[in-house]
Structures are given as structure tokens and as C-alpha cells.
Length: 123
Image (cartoon, rainbow, N blue to C red; front, top):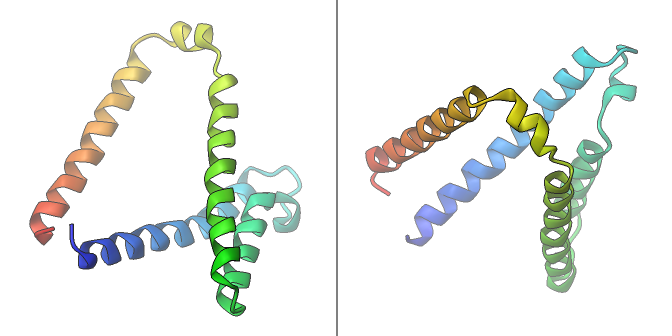
């Protein structure tokens, strides 16, 4: 992969992340009992927006940015660990094979679509 492919991947990923914010706010509002955007907004969305504004508005030293990047990797790993530890295997087994097959089919469809886009663009 060349630098152009990396630049494209970064732009696509960042666009996807930024577009998640309005979706999360909408879903939080729709599922909240109080129907107040302020009370329905997840704290991590506020933190994400604050970090994005700080990094783009201020001229931070490279060392501070590197600490933030490493911290985000560690915190993401801890979050995934917490999610994994809370999995109830008995509940998954009780659901049967249908959800697993559906998940596998969705994974194959997404992967196939991504591969088709990559091939069609010529990356």
C-alpha cells in the first residue's frame, strides 16, 4: 500500500467516525425516557468532540499527541476486555445458531463489499 491508499483510508475512517456522532445523538434521544438531548447524550460522545476540538484548535506538542494515541489504544483495549468479560456464554448458547449464522453472513457481505470497492478503485 502506498501513501495515497493510507490517506484515503484515514479520510474514510474519520468521516465514518464523525458521521457516527449525529447517529448516536439521534438514537440516544429516541430511546431516552426523558426525551431531552442533554440527558440522552452519552458522555463518550462529549469527550470525543472535546478531544477533536482541542487537537484541532490548539497547537499541541508531538509528545502530547503521542501520549494521547497510546492512551487511546490502552483504553480501547480495556473497554474491549470489559465487554468480553461480560459475555454470558449460556445466553449466547440459548439463542441458538441463527444469530451466529446471521452475523457470519453479515461479516461476509461487508467483507465482500469492501473487497469489491478496493478492487474497483484499484487499491
